[in-house]
Length: 239
Image 1 (cartoon, rainbow, N blue to C red):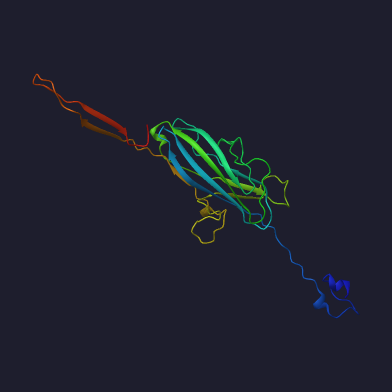
Image 2: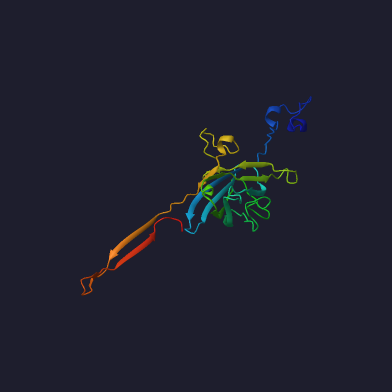
C-alpha cells in the first residue's frame, strides 16, 4: 500500500489502485465537560424551642464525556444573619461518590464552599452531600419563605490550570440533576432548569386547658369544699 494513500493523500503514478480501500478515516472527538447539580429540601423540623433544622441534599453528576477535576459546590445560605433570623449552626455529612465535606462551611462567603480537597468525577459518576442548617427566627418577619440555589463547578483534563471553571451549573430544585424545567430536554444550565429550592418557616402557637373537679368534701357547717385541677398543655410547635 502506498504511504500517501494510507495517510489519506492523493495517489501517485504506479501506486496501489486500492486508494479508496486503504484511505484512513479520521474522526475528531470534541470534549464536552458538563457538570449538573440539584438541591433538594429533605426535611424541615421545628424543634419547639424557637429553632428549626433545615436539611438539604445536593446531588452532583458528571454528564459530559470527559472526567472532571476540581469539583466544587458553593451555596450561600438564604438565612443570612439579620435582625429577623440567625444561623445557629451548619453541619455537612454523608458525602458520597468520593466527595469530601468541608470542615469550615458556614454558608456565608468566603466560607460558602461545601467541599474541600481535590474532588473528581469520572464520566457518568455521581456524588451527594447533606447539609443541616439550624436557624432561629428572631422576629415574626423571620417566619417566611426562603429561596436559594447552589452552583457546581469543575475543570476538564485539557484545561486544568486555566483561570475559572470549564463547566458550571446552577442547581435545580429536587433530586434530578438534569432539571425538570418542563421543556422536555432535561439539559442543565438553562434558565428554566435553575429553579430555586424553597423552604417556609412557620409557627403554630396553640394552648389547651382542661378543668377537672375533685372529691367534694362536706365541711359540716353547711359548706362544701370542691377542689378543681387545671391542666395546661402546649399543643403548638413553639415554646
